[in-house]
Image (cartoon, rainbow, N blue to C red):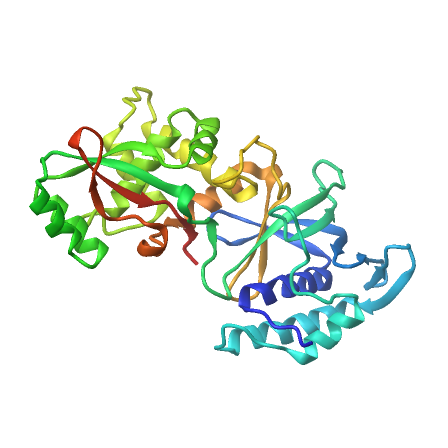
Length: 361
């Protein structure tokens, strides 16, 4: 059966080809610019039904070793670069959601690849042994791959566990007003109607206890902080959904009355902690213990085909990249049962909003 995948899935094979063709991976700055700093690749490990290692040698070849330690194939690095360029062109040119690339599939077979995405129990899409020239260490690290060649991917996936409940304050809505506002079809006009009546959103609770516990694990203030960010981007006057703008807005509010010299840094740090843990292992519905899955960091496939690395050793760079390149998104309202007003305890009115964090590109 032919291998079929979307642009993001084909990008994982592109990453494998490109890294083996170059024999190194370059670091990136907070704005996705490739730096002069790079990490030589000792080998790349891929496990499907069998385990294969891909090792560059001094003669500009890639030696493919099977799980028994035998040489499976020997292919020039130049050939990997050639195949990566062909694959990149096809990914860019196609308009289909899912597609086949027979020529690339044929080359994949030559190197022991039978699937686009190697099965994984963690957030790592590729495992690489790199040579860190500064520490002289050669660790095996798991990297998560994000591609700009397809639709922007999610950092924190939406679901029932990511619903956040707010109490409506500022105006006591009667039943007629509640029904009137709920009858408004689109989300933004509905929120505008609340603003027009003098209503505000006050954080009440995180619906799912595991997700709430995970947020508290990161920072005891985290549930209220991320709830305030989400409320701000859902207001019609925000005109932005970027993480950076949301945090700047919360800085102006200073809900925790931080009195230090750098209020911006105080709230930025909270957001960066959340983004990093979500990027490297934390999920809403599973209890978080702080142990990273993608322990190497991020590989980003840029629109021009360059690949930049955000190595966890350079934690500040990883955090800055995530902070500058993510936004709060609104998933399907009906699917996740949020966005409608309802009357609850003590006759108060509440609304749920759903938290989803997506890359901007």
